[in-house]
Image (cartoon, rainbow, N blue to C red; front, side, top):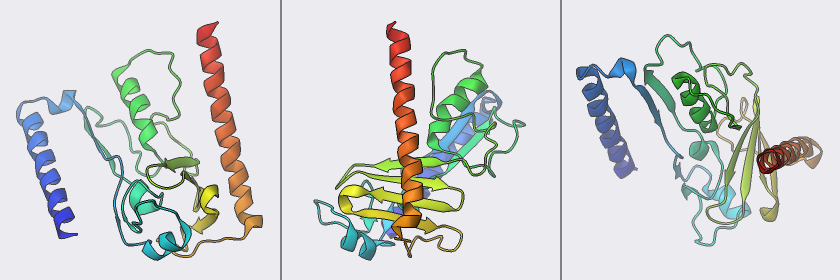
Length: 209
């Protein structure tokens, strides 16, 4: 953990140097600066739960990334600065990394006919907007669906269909396993996935014909 902390300090230093360069060069106000990450890291927060319920071909549980969708792995910062000042505040809204590309295109005024899963970060109004996250690096494929205060972790090949109340259980230690409850969210997840497939198919057909 000390090594990881030192790595973060170095990243902080590198970002500070780059930010200072933009500021000193008079480029900051004409630059869209986005700072984010592709994933977080586990430090044994869920080692027991993972070892008892999930398959990992390496035999590693509760550490690293690429094998699960607990919040310590999927929650990452999305920080914007520079030419986005006076655009408003998006911190109270539920956002995702899929929002970054449409946000940048809108900020640059780029006209396009592309379809995105995400939205402009400054135009997201729904604080209970459903968010999807997926992991398929090691072991079986896992999906997480967050709707308001509730989060579903779904890995059918592991036999996992869990719901967490993030308000009462923010560290995801006490999964709700009652299938009468969890199936409501599984149905919503599958409906979202089917709709996404239909959108992709329509896009392909529209381009082809």
